[in-house]
Amino acid sequence: MERIYEIISSALENGTKLPADFNILRIAQGEAYPPPADGTDRTFTDDGVREGEFDAVITRIPARFTQHLVVNMYAAIVLKKGVAAYDKIKKGETDEKKINACNKKIESAKAVIEKYEPITIADKVLSQMVSIKTPRDQIAEFGRYLAKEGKTVNQVKLGIAMIGFFGTPEDKDTVILLGRCGEFAFFASKALSTLLKDENEFVDACMEIVRANDGWGKISALIDLPDKIGNEEHKRWLIAHGNECSLGLYHLAVECAVKGDLGGLLLGCVNDKTHIDQELANGICNIIEGLFQAEKISGADSFSEINDVGTMLSSFAYCVRAGYLTGNDRAQALVDKLVESKYIRKA
Image (tube, rainbow, N blue to C red; front, side, top):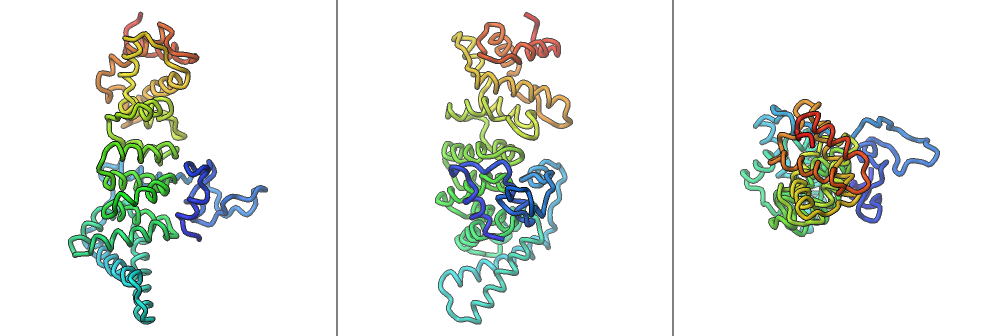
């Protein structure tokens, strides 16, 4: 298999988004990409394999699986040896026997990475590497190597994690590019949150990942955004398109209502008697529909998770009745449903 970084980089359309049929998990298991035009030569056809699903789901399990302390220490020691060996080669080691020995240690490090899911070991193993005095700059450099040269999903994930812990803001572009693939969005948004100390810069970078993804990748990155966002363009996009998701509108309805400041937008329209364009109106209706969907899903966040939700919904109803929502035929039906559900009073 080719380097994953190069596969993603080559497949990006206009440098920002991967095609809808791109799935790095299928590619990693041998499926040709792009697929042949006649549909032949597909060696992996399970369309149920969703990028980012494993990491997104396991982090939402209260008693999620974690590795034993002994496993963490063992992995940290093997990785430390691999890091040191890579550093020697990078610095120009010329002795053939020493180079071969270094390569064996690097391969042993990769074998450990393949043995354990990065989501279950990354935080604790990287902390252990610090405790056993592995130089931080060497870990960061090994992370860059894994992220850009890795040929397996696990190698790239742990590489991103290493960059996030020990890299610099100059690693931002590498992380964003990998994060445009849903399988790596969880690790990429987490890495950006530690690499970029300025919150506005983090929001800008994370939004690139959010806008490039659908499904679990979009969910993971959008959840990492702060609740209060100052950029009006980002807030508008979150309301208009944020909770559009192939997995259902309910996953991100609360996140987009809060982070897009839907309540503030609607109240402003009430006070200023301004109209809401069709793009925003459609997004608002998607959010309200998503909140209703979430009520039927065990454990999903819904209306009760939004501060001052009563004012938000009353403002929505007022805007609909006053004709402020442009070109959306779902709005009145949603107002009727809110009245029926006793979230708002009948006019």
